[in-house]
Amino acid sequence: MPLIIDGYNLLRTIQKTDEEFEHLDETGLCRFLSQYLTRIRDHGHIFFDGLGPPDKSGMAELSGLEVYFSGQDREADELIEQKIEDNTAPRRLVVISTDRRVREAASKKKATAMRCDVFWIELQRRLAQQQVVYEPKEKRNGITELETDQWLDAFGID
Image 1 (cartoon, helix red, strand yellow):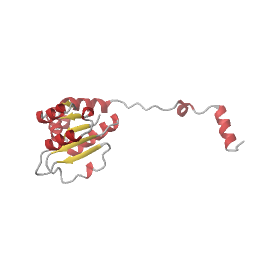
Image 2 (cartoon, one colour):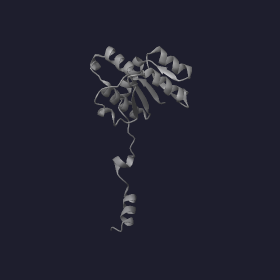
Image 3 (cartoon, one colour):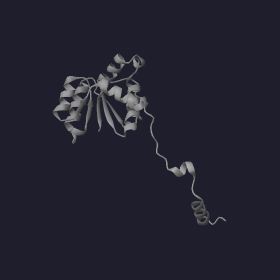
Image 4 (cartoon, rainbow, N blue to C red):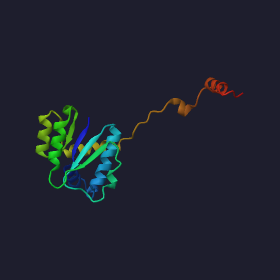
């Protein structure tokens, strides 16, 4: 389910509720979100008010996350509402914000609205989990004698 995230709303929630992350900035938040989206194999969009930090190079190559800044004349909430409105499958969206206006826009289109504090807990839980990598048993055990003989024959080796 694609995510639409109210950037500063989430960032301020994290800074207020988690002392370990009180100095987290936009770039750090985007990196966490990119890791999370990679882990859940999905994608998302994060919207920030204003122009953002002068150096945006740390946000350039994030996997699965598109970063938007509203500019000086618009609010991120407007862009989020427009993104929800323009989506062809809004019921699949998860909108992360504690802003009532944004949550109502999501509900109006039958998208899932999630509070920032709840999402942050889920993100941390998911990133803390050991990722299970399924490997074929042959990788650990090696191939059988019959398979070895077949490969030797295939390459013409005695």
